[in-house]
Image 1 (cartoon, helix red, strand yellow):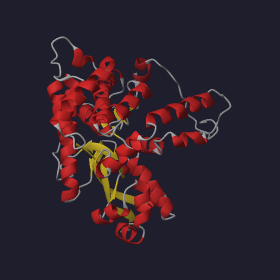
Image 2 (cartoon, one colour):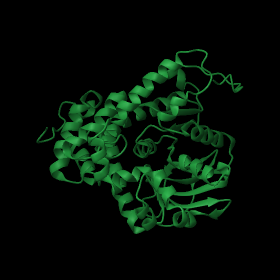
Image 3 (tube, one colour):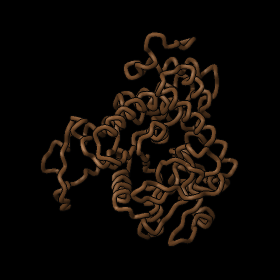
Image 4 (tube, one colour):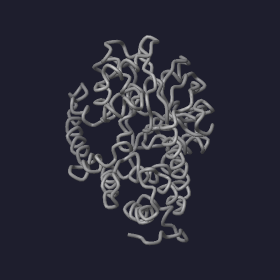
Length: 379
């Protein structure tokens, strides 16, 4: 594929992590501990407790965070030992906000990346029939909990007229009711559907297949295609896998860090006071100016009250999730579920945690070491 487009560099595939890290300037991390089978559990186990299942938010995303954070921190430690001085870690392993928070709190030189902002920017550019670089978003919040407060096309905010004249277009893009988008006056991320329409989403999940089952089948077919050495174009089927524009976002970020371009991109980065509603050390997902020194968040106005409360609640959950993942502490894990708006009930949080830990026992040794406190009322 790269030869077909005339890319001059060399690609080396290896399953030797040390060899991959030795002397690296950039380390891109995208992994799934437990594979799609673990994702299937994330998406279905919460249903037993009347809660929607999702791989990056709610109890499913929490289970994924517990499995993932220790592994990524281990890679970061190896990166510090083996990679080039000043090497960057670019993470798009979900849940990106939690993983990036853990990386930065550990001292890693890292940025987190999501495709939500670039995906909407590309669709808006197509909607207005302009080049993507002419569209700039005021993308505010934390990973998978974001809103677009402005859509600037050639420097002019087109969001008010879009919501007035074409609210249906925006609503269809993010899977939310037109009335809600008009009332909020912003375009929410499609992940907000899990919060704003949770009952409808749960009903849909209970009556259909899990996304993990669909992805497993798509990946099986893709791997069959990739076995053909003559294949020199991305298969159309790849579009059904999800994660559109991730490759463009990653290449763009790495190029800007390397070339000191100073352009603006949406990344997961330390807040540093840019978003007044969260602590300076909190990881947020906002526009930042990218140069060789890293990402410099652009200052933003405070979140509207109806957005602020949700962001602050989920950020509190994320902080507890990081601590639980690192220390294997069951009490902290229970508090994390209590803090999450999609759980938030003691009668559910405790047995739900017991079920999540047991289902993920093979990937969570910290929680099952001798002396670790068992969760009462285990299911």
